Image (cartoon, rainbow, N blue to C red; front, side, top):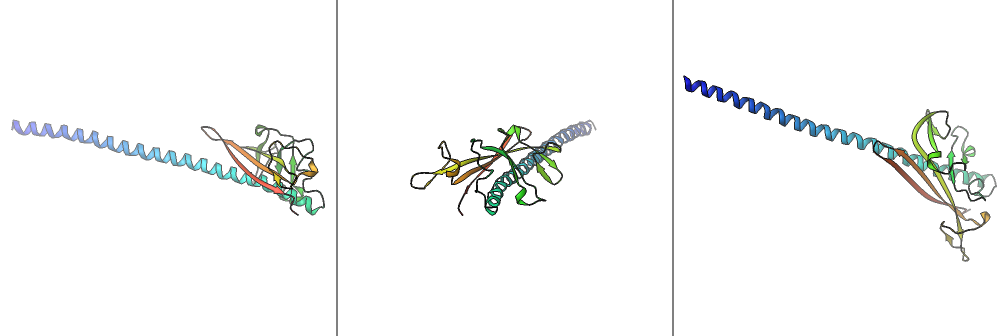
Length: 196
């Protein structure tokens, strides 16, 4: 009888150790799943922001393209309101989708991204400060492309040519935003020419 009591006591200790081990394994597994879930969720938020930034950059470039095309259709020089004689190259762009491409606007006042925040006015984002801040900023840079003596385009980068001698523009739309851990930036560059 004494032997049976010792065995029964020994089995109770094993059961307690098994229970502690099982709880530990379950906690490790749950912690792993939680870490994967948090990481996946954070990656999804970053990916969504990159998609928004790429679309905002593309919209900025397309507004500049629409202004160039509207200039052509109106019989004006292609660079009218795009390249300034004073050399200012940074701008914010806005599209008025209800009025059509002829109402696209460019404002050369801002010089740095911090001066170009975007605001949400329902379905439309623009630079008008009387709406909800989005956390994104967008600035467009327009640089003249000139030609050399053989009429070969010279990419921007310090060359000086008269405004009417410019054959195109390098358009760079820069969008930045703050994620939880750092500020991120997306850039899109295209080249527009007076090809007509």
